[in-house]
Amino acid sequence: MSAVRQSFRGDLRGEVIVIFCGPGTGILADLMGYEGELGAGGEAELLLDVANVLSGACLGGLLEQIRAITGSREADLSFSMPSVMARHVLPGQLIEPTRLTWTHSLLLEVNFTLKSRNFVAHLVMLMPEEGIQKLAGVVDDFITSF
Image (cartoon, rainbow, N blue to C red; front, side, top):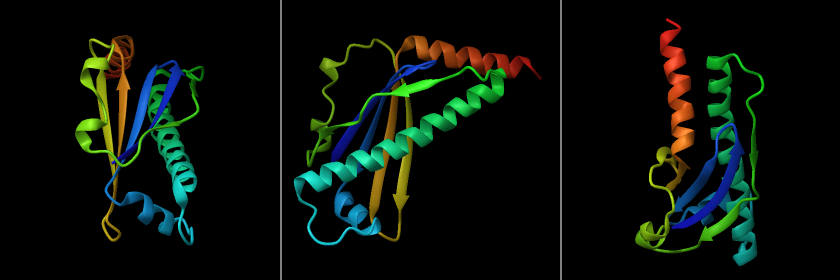
């Protein structure tokens, strides 16, 4: 596996981790039109670019839902620069649970699969307790509006 992490803050705060499984980088490079060997630098750049697009799209969609429910145009997010978290590691080596500082988190997982090309990526969004409470409030407001 290879993984890229990117933090976000604003109306919501947390971290997105995009996990690329198996031979995903080579297949992704082929799908994106890269020719020849990528090399370590090219592979890292490809992972960063794709993770940034996936993170922005998923978080942007979540923010749009919050705006639609709350009627607020003020909701906003900013992103850190993505960074490569791990390259070519076993799944158990990706996250060390003893190093996590949050006591609670909301885990949202979005899976991306291209069946015709054996490409799999997972987007995992982690948010601390105050973000969970904010989302719960938005959902409560939505439910009471009926």
